[in-house]
Amino acid sequence: MLRRLLCVLPLALTFACSRPPGAPVPQSVAGAPSEPVIAEPATSADLERPGIAADDFVVIADQFKDIQILRYQAPGFSDLSLQQKKLLFHLSEAALAGRDITWDQLGPYNLRVRRTLEAIWQSYSGDRSAPEFAAFQTYTKQVWFSAGIHHHYSGNKLVPGFTAEQFANFVKNSDASKLPLAEGQSADDLLATLTKVIFDPEFEAKRTNRGAETDPVRDSANNFYERGIEAEDVERFYKRRRDPKDPEPIWYGLNSKLVVDGRTLAEQTWKVGGMYSKAIKKIVASLEDAAEFAENPAQKDALDKLIAYYKSGDLRDWNAYNIAWVKDTESLIDTVNGFIEVYDDALGMRATYEAVVSYKDPEATKRIAAIAKEA
Image (cartoon, rainbow, N blue to C red):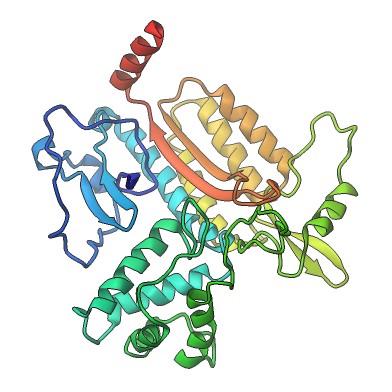
């Protein structure tokens, strides 16, 4: 069965919703254009636009390999106040600002691969009707969906349906100004790195490796630990730092990368002024804009504490934010934004950036409550 992704524009927004009764379900996307539809950046004027009629709404956006991309409507959005819509907008901008953090966390080569694939997609001057280019497009969609070169569920390395020679042709016949070239680097230099990354099945083979007879840090392709560090090094590092008598312990390592600093190890904290500072500054700026449209004091307090945490990187500030967040039980609008889930780290310590923005659908909530009452 195809994996299914529930998508709403903007992508950072997730809503509790369902297909309206009687709405048509497209039978095929075989005739869908190969070029993606690039939406114009959202503006505050978009918040006033009417929704799409159910009969005109296309559910299936695309499908490839084991993926089917679905669009879902957001019933009740038009009933929100302008203040609430602006709050949703700024929270979604905060969510999107962290996109590249996730890509980098899931593998040190992911951003270079993505930017190279996108340069080819946009500017390749060769035969775009050739079967190898169709295979390239499918691989690119897989990489987009998985936020990297590893399958989104299995963590195994994605297998391209084109050859290294064909990839070199794609790169050399694309606009070099769009390629992620370092200063003084040529397309051949880029190919020397990415050919191994994409086509060598043994190199960076598993995003998160918990297999027997493996070192979960050394043998995982994610980017939570600098290359050369092993699991026992991590355990020794944190054993010296944990205080078993601390009544309110922090989650050590949750928001940092562990690196080699001379002869010792050190944390590079993900915060303003630290690692990923450029992206986190944008997250903070959008959260500050969002806080101006908070629905109530409890929601504003939670957002202010989240901003303080991103600025300090102090995990006790993270604890304070979460306490404030669970106290807000009245807001219709909600967001999850931060380094939260740790399953991409084989040691279960470091968290991948994630963000979701949502609002309550009162009618759907009533239906679910009625079902739960009868359970």
